[in-house]
Length: 370
Image 1 (cartoon, rainbow, N blue to C red):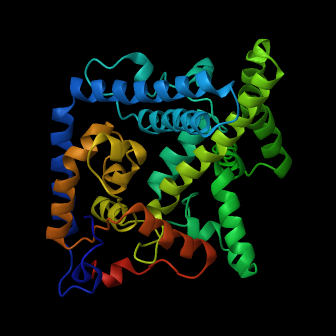
Image 2 (image 1 turned 135 degrees about the vertical axis):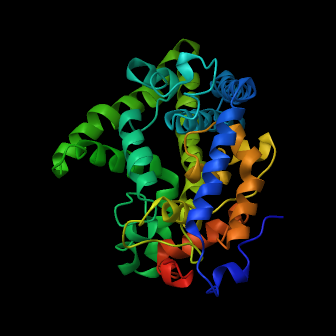
């Protein structure tokens, strides 16, 4: 069973961590990953894509009959698989794999008109790649991190306790629509300098995100079933609406706890060098249970969050291969490697969200970093 970091790793060590040596070993592992890229990675990607298509097909094939849990769950899984694909392909995870099809590269997948084939979601692929790949990964856990949950929920902590928990549930059910679309669009519009106005953001959200997605999923697709009768179209609409809530819940449960918890660190400044940058990616992230395609698929391969933040541009399959090596390197250098079940991490994230716990902030002092 995965366990959290040892108490020794979380206490003040007697000597400083050798960040240069730690950095060198991670870079050596990166070179090994690069040399191992090949057809196995592409076959694995195609298999996961096929699973998502099967789920979506089952969902639509049964959605017209009546509102039912099978269609809702299958449609949700199909949409979540699109999210999974965009996350790893958009990170350039397959760009350097020999023989990769152009449609599975970051230059093509989800770009332009292919957005509606590859990743029709509440946000635009370009805005998401900028907010997530560029801003979040470059400043994980820092004030500049747009996804720093503790910082983003400071206003929640001032609300009555029952309101805080209600807000958490509402966010989990709607977060791709209510938070992520807005955050990604605001940062996308700000990328060349200057903060967009409230109405500029809402206009772009309506024109490029909310209206197109809602029009596709909740109007056009149900209307395609209208020849089967009004009940069929209504059933598709209900199944699609509930599937969207389920997809939000599924993705929020996985993404929300990745960098939050009282045993993880946030940072008030920039890392001094590459060694400290790698150190921060580890101590500011958490893994979940790992191993096997079914377990990893259920977690979108974000159960390897530590490995993903060390190597964001490698294929999904590589994370499973290198995870034991990364953990061993971290433990040998005294760098805490946190890995617990999703349910444990959800509870820790929730306590940060409602203000019952705070994240750690003094990594340099706690680990005697010179």
